[in-house]
Image (cartoon, rainbow over all chains, first blue to last red; front, side):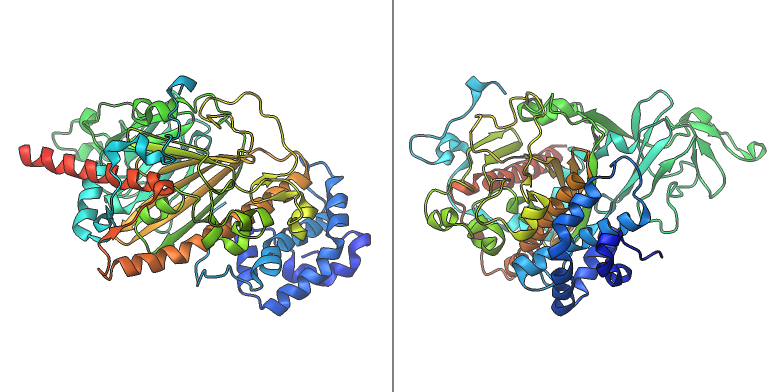
Length: 107
Length: 426
C-alpha cells in the first residue's frame, strides 16, 4: 500500500496504514475495536488539519478517481468522521447504551 | 392528498380526538410477546400484503436480478427484469426438483447479478426471465413432460414510484398503488428516480419488529432517550423539556387506512451555537447538509401543511415499509421479523449524488451521525422486549404523541382478527 499523502500533510503519513480506510464497515469496526486513547490520539492529530484537508481534496473533480495520495487523505477524513462522535459526543468508542450492537454497512 | 382533506389538530389539543375509532385506553402488548400471535401475523399480515423488496435501480437492465431471503415466510424471492423490461418476482426454486436456484456459496445469503437466463445448477435446466422453461437437459429421459406448465413459480410483483413490491397472496386483487392509498398518492411526483448516492445498513435486533417501528413513529422520546446526542443539548431544547416541544412534537399527522405519517421539525441542519466541531468542518449534521439545494416543487405529501420550521416527514406504510424524507433525500426503513422477539432492521439512504468531495464528506457525517442515533434506540428496544417477555405488564400506556403506535397495533390486530374470522368461515 502506498502510504503517501500530499506534501502539505506529510506529518500525518504515519497514520495512513492504520486509519486510511475506504470501506465504511471496516472503518466502523476500527472505531469500536480501538481504545479511547487510540481514537483520541488520532483525532487530536488529524482534526487541526481537517479544514485544510477538506479544501485541498475539494479542488479535485469528484467525477474522476483521486490520485492515491489524495485518496489516502480523503480516507483519513472518512475515519475522522467515523470517530468524531466517539470523541465529541459519547466519550467512548461505542454509542452510549448500545451494548455490542452495531449497524452492518451493506454498501 | 388535497389541502382541504387535511385533518387539523382538534381544539382539545389532542390528535387522538380526531380518530375516535382508535380508542384512547391502554393498548395490549400481547402482539409483541405471544408466539401464537406471531404465527397469525405471518399468515394474515406478511403473507397477504405488499412487501417492499428493493428499488428499480437494483435491476437496471434485462437480466439484472437480486434475491431476498424471507426465511420467516419460508421462502427466498428472485426479483428480475425481463427482456420485455417488465420486473417480475419468483420463488427462488427450480420447478424440476425444487433446488434453490440463485445463490452463491451459502444458500441463505442474498445474491445479485445479471444473467440471460435463470440456470439451475442441480441438473442444468434453464428458464427464461419470465419464468417459462427455456430448456431441460436430457430431453430423451423426460416422461409425460408438459413444458408449458414447468415454470418458476411466480409471485405478484408491482412497482410504485420505483419501489418494487411483492405480494405472496396469489388471490390478491388490489394493486400496490391502491394498497398504499391516499398517503402514497400524496408522494407521487417526488424526485424518487436515481441516480442516488445509496448507503445501506442492517442489524438483527432482539425485539419484535413493531417495537422498532414504534421507535420511529414518535419523536416524543427524542429529548429523553437521545438527550446526549441531540435531544437535550440546546437551551431551546432544555427549555422545552416538559412543555410543548417545537423540535419533536408532531407538526402534522395523518392516519389513512392501514398507513400513517407524521411531520416534525427536528434539529435544524444549519450552524448553531451548539454545532459540534466536526459539523463545522464538514458543514453538515444529522439533519443533512447546511447548504440547501432547491429540488423544485414538492408533492402535497411533503411538508403537507407547508410549515416553516419543517425537518422531516415520516411515512409508515403497512406493514413494514417506512419512508422518511429530509434535507438529504429519502430513507427507507424495512423491518423483517425473524421470530416473535427478534427482527432484521434494514435502512437504505437515498441521497442526492454528491457533486464535490466536500458534499460526499458531509453525507458521510450525516450517515454516521444518524446511525449512531439509531444505535441509541437499538439496545433499549432489546431491553424493553426482554421485560415485555417477563409478563409483568399486559398493556402499553400511549399518549397523544404516540397515536401512530396505537394505530399500527390496531391495524395489525384487525388484520389478524379478520384473517382468523375468514379462516373459520371457510
